[in-house]
Length: 105
Image (cartoon, rainbow, N blue to C red):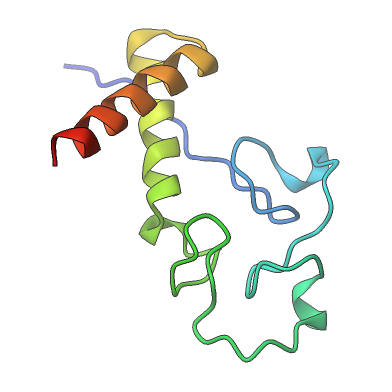
């Protein structure tokens, strides 16, 4: 059987948000090391290995596979592709599933 192609998550290397690329970004730059409003070469933060801007985890924002936000965005992308939904519809569906799974715990 043929499996549907599910595109990768787009992570903007300028603002570190999902859904677009840096050349399309109109937001301010964010440091991928500490999450503050400056570029990485200007960062003097002694944060090793880094601080994720998505979950405040102890990993770099570029090491996104460790972040719950990455998994959420990946799930949204899958629902869009498999169920032929818009981004908003897929996001609502995924958030409802995630909310219900946390509610049962």
